Image (tube, rainbow, N blue to C red; front, side):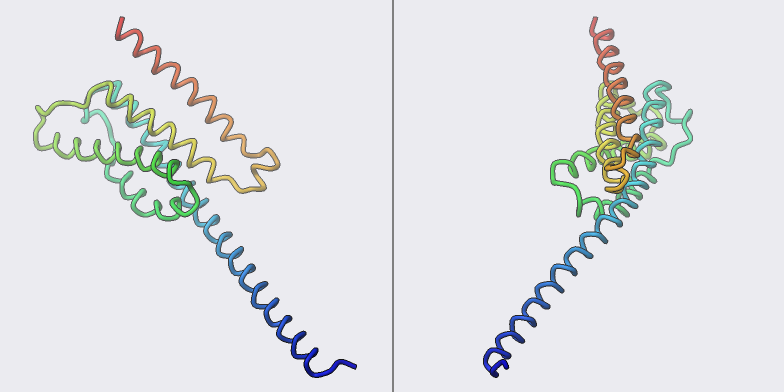
Length: 184
């Protein structure tokens, strides 16, 4: 038979273990919720960045705001709505890389708004547009990595990341070649 002191120690230990286990479970559930929210935000931001990349490429090619049907403000709106979820799961440097792409898009939105009222305003330089493209390409890859679930990454179904890496490397090589040709 157990005396009262031993029973009290066992009860206190069990209560303490229960409290610790409950805390661990709550922490794991909160982390899971953050990851789920971030995955959804990353998927939406990836789509907006993908459209932005095309728009900036077209802007660079046509050098004319009127030839594009692009809601430049929508990129900033998506960022404002979803950046907090991404900030909770990305490290500081990676988050700032993604933020930089959206800041470039905000600059283009501001330039577009200014240009509508001052059509003779200076158009963004080719070098600046290439910089925005590089920032968007880097952000696309970072956001895409967040968008996949652990199961997709472990089972090899996260093929979009590898395909995007190949596409971005090809795009980077083409941009570098363009720069070399312009400098020559």
